[in-house]
Length: 370
Image (tube, rainbow, N blue to C red; front, top):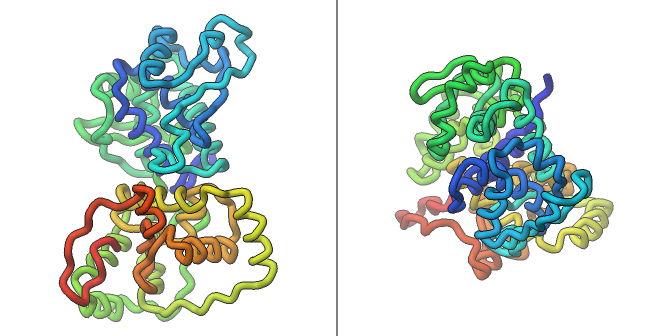
């Protein structure tokens, strides 16, 4: 079956689950409900849910789970339990309505895809009748799993979910399970959130096939050996990033070949004018995305990874222009022409959106923030 998530969407799914388990909730009932509600309300802090949706979750005590979320300030009307089960009820999550410091910075398209993935995973045949702890565990392992190899059990998997892992193996959600490793069963690998390389090429949707005929492994090794220590660390973080899974010649080309000057067509500038009017929060969302991306990947996003990860659905020329405007307006900053170095700029930092304090580098080194 076709994969439900791109690499960027898988990252958003993992960020959703990390956010949910960071909340002070009493059990997996409340955590599972929080996951469904949070992704629906990720854009603007308000999402719709029906009584039928609630029933599908098969919570052991749905009212108690809702009460636990209300204790965090989430606004869940009691009509969800007592009214028409098919009627949409708005749920408000104040934490997700913030303009700065948003814990789930996603675009609408990305939000919708991740929400659909959550629903499909929870209703997959091997898990749909299991208790909440097992289904929440299924979400975690799908989000962190690959389509063709064993993965590490995520460190933030709740203990109740860890105890339910044998049930996922018995029901065929997992093909293998050891103390700290697992492999998704073939029947559910289309739910996996990590896109690994295959045959030397990236399987990440949207990746451009390698076409640089001048690549030479020895020349690449020499280039890295002559780089400053900080730049070399950054290069190797990108080159060996399992989440990006980029071919080595693609990485080498990005660093070794000077980028061509950007030529902006009038049509692109016109499209940008219309697009920016529909995205007034583009600066803060982009800056927050770079912080979250860097925390997971160990390096900043590329222009494409930024625009696609936010679900903006832009072609490459418009996407590149959008990012250059974000840099020009100081929402983002990049280290010269060094790729994969996007991070929050002065305008974002003024709103409290910043990376953890970087190390002090020796003069002439690429800053640690790369």
